[in-house]
Amino acid sequence: MKEFVIELFPNVYEMFGDLLDSIWQTFVMVGIAGIFGITIGTLLGIALVVSAKGGLYENDLFNNILGKIVNTIRSIPFVILIALMVSFTRFLVGTSIGVRGAIVPMVAGIIPLVTRMTEQALLEVDPGVMEAARSMGISRPYIIVHILLQESLPGLLRSLVTSFISLIGLSAMAGSVGGGGIGNFAIRYGYSRYMNDITVVTVLLLLLIVNIVQSVGNRAAQRLTH
Image 1: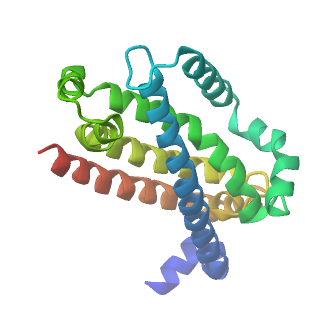
Image 2: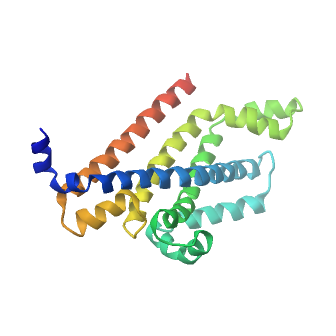
Image 3: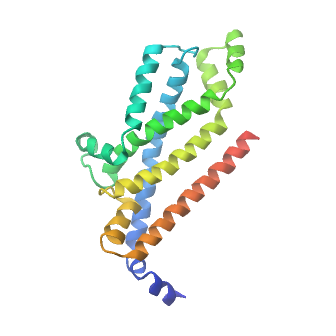
């Protein structure tokens, strides 16, 4: 069996240690970028909802400006965003390549997506529930935390899963420009050196990770819904 695997994936076997390192780098990139990007994006999504017309903190000017900023960043292709942020990334973390250099543009790239998905999840909450709470004199911060967020938990969880899956894709794209992780490993060896077995294995690994995240997230969302 071992001989068959070596014959089928010779380069993967030879560089197995590097492959494990690239997987770990991907987890680090996705984990750190996810913590910052999803936190900021969720807060901005809440801000968009509560500042909209008829919201708890209605403010048309703020809502319009924030919405346009989110839409502008969201419309920029991620590879171009990496290039645009090179100077800022170097200033912030000291380098624009490797794992540290990839995390900053990954955070910037995921924030608009999380913001819009959070906004959509919150808008699905029945407005009548919040109106009833306001008529009873319940404070606005309490309504946001205990009614708006609580009622939208299944939708927020699904958006969280989608965000992590998107981050895995962003990490692979960041790897194509020296960002580290599985994407960088696939480009450096599988593509540049024509090691097809490495390309196949890295693609299968990404598919496996995405499917695991999706399955776990779906089950959690179903439990919250019931």
